[in-house]
Length: 161
Image 1 (cartoon, rainbow, N blue to C red):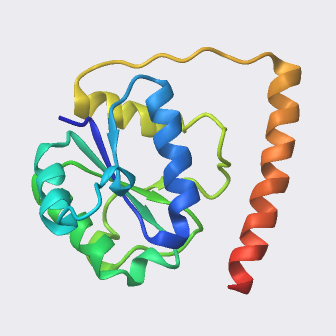
Image 2 (cartoon, rainbow, N blue to C red; image 1 turned 180 degrees about the horizontal axis):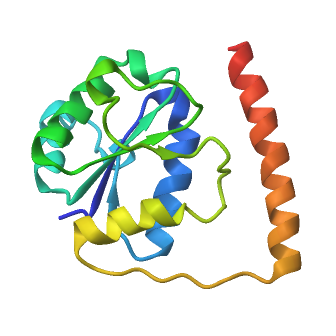
């Protein structure tokens, strides 16, 4: 049984992949549609995973708020009280989800540490703690700068699409 299910729309796949990688590095078992097998019924599989997961992270972005799949997965997760909404780009979530506290990832870049608030929610919902080591200060500064540049480039590229 996976700890975390990630719901996203295709253009947000790099962000979903980065979140999955960060969580996996902490020992969290993550399931997202990259694990679907060829020919597998994705509707049935996704519905089953949402019923099993302890947490469902839904990535809200200017693209995902218009996705019937993401909104549907978010609704199913909310019904089970496992929804953990995150905001990728400052967009307002769909009306039914605006009253929920949403983790702000607008300044987060792949490779950064996930926000403590997000990890705390995952820990509470899964019932187990996760730990992470701290990189050296100089290494962390260089990594942060390179990630910010990459994120800026990606955001400009995505706007042109």
